[in-house]
Image 1 (cartoon, one colour):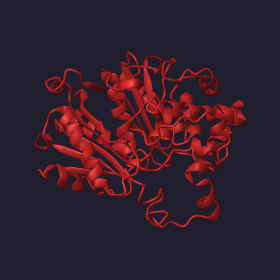
Image 2 (image 1 turned 45 degrees about the vertical axis):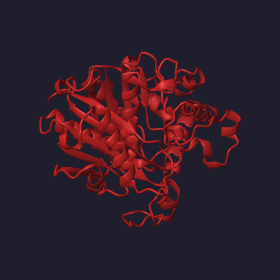
Image 3 (image 1 turned 180 degrees about the vertical axis):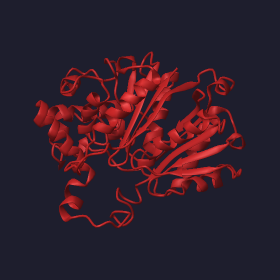
Length: 379
């Protein structure tokens, strides 16, 4: 296995693009990553595209950036689609199969809605009414996880709401975020309830977006840039075997397993991290993932946000991009965007939201019922 580094990184501003199609957004991100790496499309040896709702986007991207006959792989893995695409490309380069890989994550939800054009399950499966309308929807899955944490540790709705306050504050400094508006605590608490304890401002918005990265073997990367960002760990996990079906989806175990593997692979631990971009599709999971990633002890997530330790400038800044709560969550784009965000900070290119002195960063995405990815990047 060769050491692998990121040479080019780019993303477009997340938002709504009613006058564009998803392949145009993806191509814009790809061209930006190519320019950042200082290479042309002809030098790319493989393209890996992550898109959940329009999975043949990879071939459509090449119509914009150049059809060079290289292998194209399209990846689908729920919310971890983009980060799984990145991992696939990483493995291709690490094993020596290719030397230059282009990864693009993209999604267009503004035209489709969260559940697709028909508003229903894409596989036309038949669920019991309670499961389909209740506990199988993502707002409820993550609300239930939060309620269980409240029951077990005494976590309060105010502590979960403070996650949204923090991330929206961070988002005001990110020009790529869909929303750049502060939401004081009372505003968050008094917003319309979506699925208790998550109010409207504790839920990520849907939208459109794309992000892209160029990766190479570390030795070759050093010939292209003075700041190659090393991929120190790339891990993918899924839900573990259970003797019986769970009544509530487990949003914790696969992240804990992925974190353990990633720290072992990188030879690092939680205390070595300078920043984290994690999957805050709702306010509740961010607090849970503080504990799942080992940033604090079990039951201490509430205290961690109370003490401001995850703000930019705190012990371990989390989601200084504004997270999904501010940046938005175009499903296939999110995983690559988190990696791009960490890359920019390690390069010192994140502008006013820069985590000062960042040398090690972690990017995390969870796709309920499908996958968890963790990537640890180092200077």
